[in-house]
Amino acid sequence: MAATPGTSRSLGAQIALMLVIIVFCVFPFYWMVTTSLKTQVLALESPPVWLFQPTVSNYLTVLFDDGVLRTLVNSLIVAVSTTALAIMLGLPAAYALARFEFRGKKDLWFWFITNRMISPIVLALPFFLIVRNLGMLDKHITLILIYLTFNLPIVIWICTDQFRSIPYELDEAASLEGASQWRIFRSICLPLAMPGVAVSGIFSFIFSWNELMFALVLTRTNAKTAPAMAVSFMEGYNLPYGKIMATSTLIVIPVLIFALIASKHLVRGLTMGAVK
Amino acid sequence: MAVKTPRGTIFGFLAPAVITLAVVGIVPLLYAFYTSLHFFNLTKLKNVRFIWFENYASVLTDPVFWEAMGRTFAMLLIALPLQIAIGLGIALILHAPGLGFLRLLTRLSLVLPMATTYAVVGLLGQVMFNLKFGVVNQLIGFLGIAPVNWIGDPFNAFAMIIFWDVWQWTPFVALVLLAGLTTVPSEVEEAAHLETKSWWTVLRHVQLPFLMPGLVAVLILRTADTLKLFDMVFTLTRGGPGSSTELISLMIQRVGFRAFDQGVASAQAIILLIITIILAQFYIKAFYKEV
Figure 1 (cartoon, helix red, strand yellow):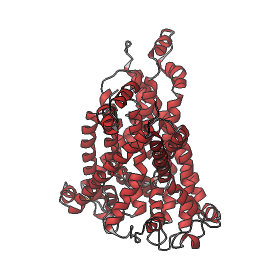
Figure 2 (figure 1 turned 45 degrees about the vertical axis):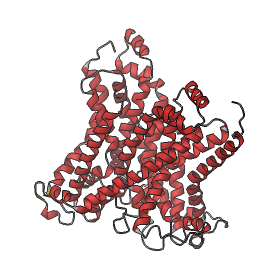
Figure 3 (figure 1 turned 180 degrees about the horizontal axis):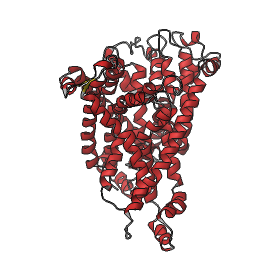
Figure 4 (figure 1 turned 180 degrees about the vertical axis):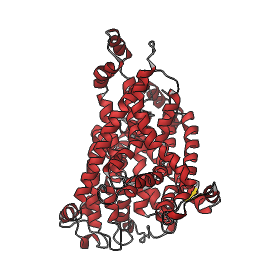
């Protein structure tokens, strides 16, 4: 493109705007991490201080004295198990939606999508009563199963899309060779669908790891997850800001890493394949 | 698809997911409906009794319920236009050519807010918007603005939750719209730029049609997510001060788990569910592609 008089000025504006966007997005994280490195006295300094001697004491206290380590382990157990389960149950269904024609397919699809819209509070009320009657409050397996209500649809959505992108001729060729439908799925399509499986797994992990309401309602101590733990610091007056931010940092860092890994697919996942 | 697949095979593939989702997703809803037809208070479990649709009658005539619903849609109607306007601006900036590395960096930083745990956003809000030790009041102080009581004032608290919703979800809108901009054929866009210098004309007449699918998706998902919004507001304000930030999900949670009235809360939840399904039907029919 030919250089026009306005170009260098608009380039400068473009750079400035991008820097503004970056600062806007990143500043809260900067503040979270720096606050987590302050002592309680420093954190309650008014106006807030920007330069100080950092300390990791908040991290040590929350991890080893306040039991945040255990809640992080709980979060990990729940998120990994529910993700594995969602993938195992969801993949065959996604394959069926991508490859087979059958009556009621439209309704099934609609039902799956509707699950994305339903407010978790609608499920949290009956879950609480059912789980309490079954004596399953405060158990990992309860959260693992309940998180399937949002993980299973997401795996099915993303993987249906992925299976559809695999050429149907491969299935036909294998079918002529006499392979069963299950073998075609297992040995031919599944290996080719691995990118979709990975992306849906990352999504399922992020959503489960981030979930608060079900964890708040259905766990007490044993299976308490890290977000529920962070919230329990919020009781009383003199809030331990440093500790709260240290816990928050520990919660957020794994998801941010996963999100950056999957950043190319984030839009596709969050819009349930509505936007490529 | 030429070959007809045996029904048994189809069933075998679908059954595990469908049965599981029915057990965890539909059985509880039926139970919620059952609860909603009862007087069901967790502190008076001896008195549980069937009362037909009394809970529904009291919810439908309860101004507090409709205020919470109105507040939720008010939040959507304020936050969404902001997210679309700022998001479109960001998308256009990122769509302009050049500055490869800085552009990559901007895109990556956009990913961060939307992956952040909602609960952590609320906690961050508590820390950053605190009246005395909050950095936000310090920053606006540099501009000569007196400290604002964000969390303690009904109006400001509502503005604050909108701020965080905009912070967290504008990047999402920006990336969706950016994806839309990249679908505009480059010859068409270049030709348009030769015709006119006005970016608005290009946007309105050339790019907008390509942005429509993304905009519809944003509209659907932001509506659903605002009706679902709980974690961030709960950790930030608990619905207060008063009930100024009590969105519909927070209200149902308060009635069910802090006032222990599961019967009324279930009726509210079922009504919310019906509203959600009507909206979803309407939206999905209008947009989502089918299998």
